[in-house]
Length: 460
Ligand code: HEM
Image (tube, rainbow, N blue to C red; front, top):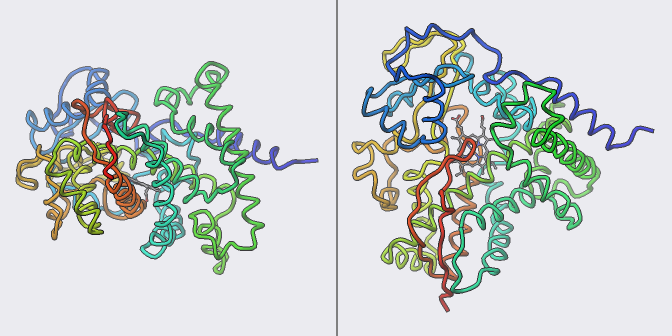
């Protein structure tokens, strides 16, 4: 007899067998001489610069080579980075048939799966995006709010007054719980207990493990072996949840993302199947968990560094002023971008900012440099939430969520979640930053190196 677990195992095997090489299939690598200026160092050094010292490196490249420069990285396509708002506008508005985003994310394929919104391009991306969008519109976000607030209250309620800790760790635990409960919609304690370690191991996967995926024999050893075993375990749990949910009689009343995704497209005969649902859920987990946690921990740290900002935030919370909390989050995403750049691979030659670029090049706005331009953000090194009060910075100067048809689908979700969490924290505690912190690269995202340590003291 074929069991549900056998089915899940077979689907996972097929996913592994279908993996594409890093960089994705696409136009051949380009003639390097035709690209904008950039360092002539060996690729290994440029890769280290970008991966290890990202923040200092791109700002230095901008000072040295100007508004458009090229970085060459090992195993990847040459990367042409743009830094002016009008460049970002051109890239975001670029024809999605020419400006492909999925190729640049292909390293995540073994984990996210081929149907992942992040990995698709062209008509497949358009279809998936259309099916996912309703679960992230304003109406849906309002329905997620109360559970997010409840989970935040439970987390914050466990903190000891007078203690200090790495806020990133607590925010990671909280945003993971939000994904499990609000996005996956799991409420069964036994299933949650099984899912947590698998989901933790999934988000912990390192680029080295993913880069080694091209060599299947590696999967018999150490971290590769553990990653494969974890993927099988995670998929078994995910498919069990998906199939049980399909049987639920209260699907239409449920307010989690998975239940919404199950209903969408059914009337037109274009619903997401089980494999598609699994791939999109793992994508939302990987895209939405640590990003939001990192933004939140920077926000706590920055408010904790200034008694004036702390007082202003506590007053805002007491008066129910969410606009200020929203501004705090946006400013922390500006000063500490979580994702360093947005990338597109050119399927045909294109001209950006007057620069002719060949097919096969990867292009993108540098979020780090865009957020540090003083003509867009005066005194760019200063944390000042007022920039976002009653106004927005000029278009394409604040781009933490990318833009165009690929703009982060979870942008509204993460701001809603962030405001709910800040409200819970500051209504109960005074927060003080402990020590100084700086960004460090963790996989694709940047996080506070010391975890944004804070000390909390009960207010009442
Ligand atoms: C502070 C939090 C977050 C940041 C900084 C962030 C940033 C980004 C960026 C820069 C992109 C690429 C956009 C582009 O290519 O133009 C992206 C895409 C995406 N994000 Fe987020 N994100 C965050 C939270 C979330 C959350 C909470 C979710 C879901 C629950 C999510 C799901 C996604 C998905 C599915 C995509 C792919 C969209 C597509 O290709 O159509 N993100 N995000």
